[in-house]
Length: 219
Length: 219
DNA sequence: CCATCTTTTGATAGTTACTCTCATTTGAGA
DNA sequence: TCTCAAATGAGAGTAACTATCAAAAGATGG
Figure (tube, rainbow over the protein chains, first blue to last red):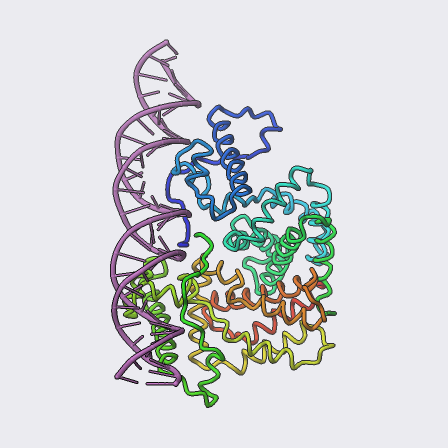
């Protein structure tokens, strides 16, 4: 439970990440292998988690199932928890928020963008994966914790956006409060959704939650 | 980094905790010893953290400094991080919030109570301790993480209070959002305070932060 | 196709936070 | 003083990491 920090040589990130599959950039063999290893690790991990639960599944098992050494596992995922983190939505959110009028209250922008994104963007499979991740996050504290931490989390991005929009260099307390509140609402809503078995519509829930934040004063 | 959970027999909590020093209840020898062990552990730990930093200080060192076995350490603090958590203010907060008119918006109650509590309640020494804890929390991710998690954190208590006040059995999404937002604001403010070297007035900051939450819609 | 250079990998040997179990000590209460 | 429950210590074990280094495998220029 010490602060994890990988000083060990890691396989370098495929730079423009996942977009170049669509763009013409042909992946080199090396890059393809790395991608496949990463996917295999994640897939095997999720399978094992589903079969045996989070705690009963060791990193060694995951590595074995993916046919790599434990060392290699840690080169791809600095912690076991990181298997469940993805920040792939952050850039999209950032872009969409920047496209909104700058004089609009930030929470209004965020609400519109987040709800819209969730409503449109998720394919069935993405939805299912998100659900699995959130289910685990909801039941395993250390995962929730890592999720709240910030690495792959929206707070950092929201903070930057807010600071930028306010024309500030460093975030004020108010800015930090706004970012923290939205991020907390986002996480809480996802967890709530997972708690209820993923049966309700996530976009609706999110709309409700952020709407509630807007009128916190009245309840 | 597995989910920590103490299944080992722990020294039982001195039930009404810390209040009975003021009340007439004379502590038994056993209770006094437990209290002293807990305090010693925490004090020695803080000293070592200050001297060597968080990571360089091992649990074994702390136990040795407090002259107990490592086993005993874990009986008192399920994780190293827990050394920095205290929920001693929670009961006071709960009581004070319950004393407010039930038809008042919850955030208004919370703001009044929290700010009042912080403004009045902290002796110089409490203030200094809180500052040290927050300083560490602000700089050591795993601690911040554990702080956000909820164990010693106000979210759980706020959630109960809110659910109770709304006359519900189980918390709705709205209730969860409110609790999460207030809790996040509380933590964020404390971290901000620590970031700034503890020079500003915590009560003022808190008032500002919760006030900002009330008008999130306008910014 | 070959030789070299770089990146990725695996093996091995720690360290540390924690868990479990069990025998011993110590305070509580009669 | 005897008895019982609670608290402690000792020791062995697990699992998540970290650090190091040599071997394997793609990339690259000729």
